Image (cartoon, rainbow, N blue to C red; front, side, top):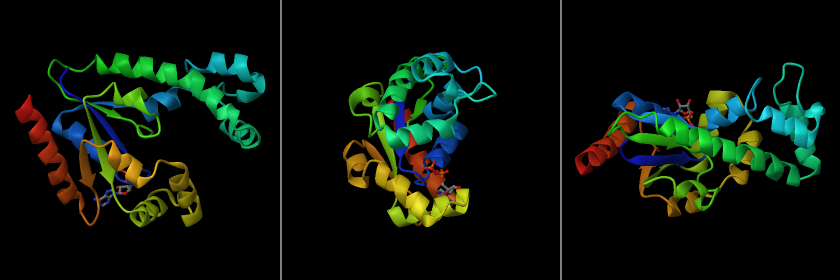
Length: 201
Ligand code: ADP
């Protein structure tokens, strides 16, 4: 494998769009959000541990994590999310490491990590460089309202729970400012980084 890049950004920043462009350019993508979802889906590797720690009521009839139930429980006991993270984080780390090794020799690996900033050093020490996709909160709100048909309040709530824009920028080696850019212009910005990494290799 080649360089390992940690890609992050707040909700609606355009992080997934940038990840997709990097794959088109030839990167090997490791999507930690997708890994997390698969761990708690039917037959997922975290299901048994969740059943043991939280009880069978937290597994729905299909055999997947009952997300509504978990959300309700987390609402009344904020340690619940920490306990769930205690199950999921080591597994996500293991699977991400396995998937990273599937890159071709020299291929740039992009780890898409929504909560890279929030996770302290845990992910940062696994990657060579951190790329932050950045834009104004108002732009995040408009994008997510259009993409997912959420209310403004729902998006604002998630933004308030995530790391601040300045905390994210503070850990960035590169910033892609995805503001007032059309998709072609965004592609050009991503391509600049791609060329930089390939020339440095
Ligand atoms: P994230 O993964 O950060 O939540 P996405 O990559 O899904 O964000 O982007 C949010 C929405 O905004 C998507 O519908 C995406 O197509 C759109 N979008 C992102 N960047 C741009 C851009 N530069 N021009 C037009 N649409 C964009």
